[in-house]
Image (cartoon, rainbow, N blue to C red; front, side):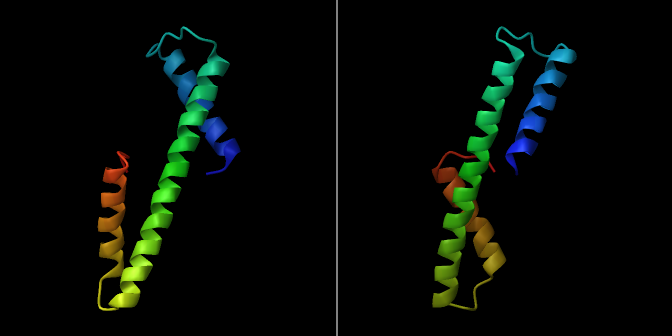
Length: 89
C-alpha cells in the first residue's frame, strides 16, 4: 500500500470513530492519525517481511522436492512464521 493510501485510510478511520462517538480523543486528531499511520505502516512492513521469508523457504523446499504443493506449503509456512513473530494475519 502506498503512503498516501495509508494516510487517507488512517484519517478516514480516526475521523469516522470520532464522528460516530466511538472514541473521545484526549489528544489532537492529527496526532491520533499519525499514530495510526505509524501502526499501519509497521504492520504492512512486518507482513512484507513474513512474505519474503516465506517465499525464500518455499523456494528452497521446492528445489529439494518439486512434488510438494507450493501453495499449500506457502500457506502453512506463512502461518507458522507469523505465529512465531506474534503477528496475526
